[in-house]
Length: 202
Image 1 (cartoon, rainbow, N blue to C red):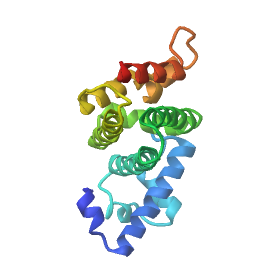
Image 2: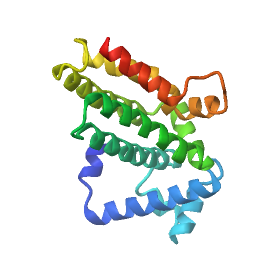
Image 3: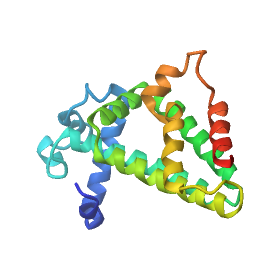
Image 4: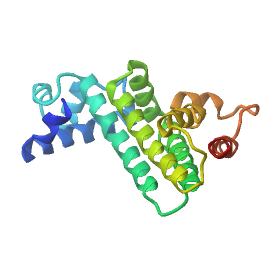
């Protein structure tokens, strides 16, 4: 489903879509993405699989919609941070640390959620790429604010945002976090964040 299609849904259809997504996410979290099929989702809702297919063409499409919804929550958190009346440096610190916290708590503490996210990343869905672009836009605005306030050196905010994303990927990318978490020869989250802040100021 496209975003336009979703925005134009009538309330009854939207309610059914949300019910399906809620049930699917609950089952994915409990049993895992691979072990859950459309028939399981339909059974949980007391409806036929054919009824599910009236709203979603496949399990993949349901999964994509759930990931889009999860990423929307992450974006809202980032947007709220970007608007806080604190310094640009502190907004970037909070932005990265909160992204890291969410990755640890949501993606890793809940193994089945991690599985969902890994599948989405491996399929390179457009929702993931769009989410990254939107986060880069928020960070670029924070960098721009910092430049205008004399906090950061003059630079291209868009390039800086992409570099911040690359430099802190090991804190926010679920697979990289999982691989690096127990390694003693990796930079800590605080070390990486302060490195980024120093780079913006020099």
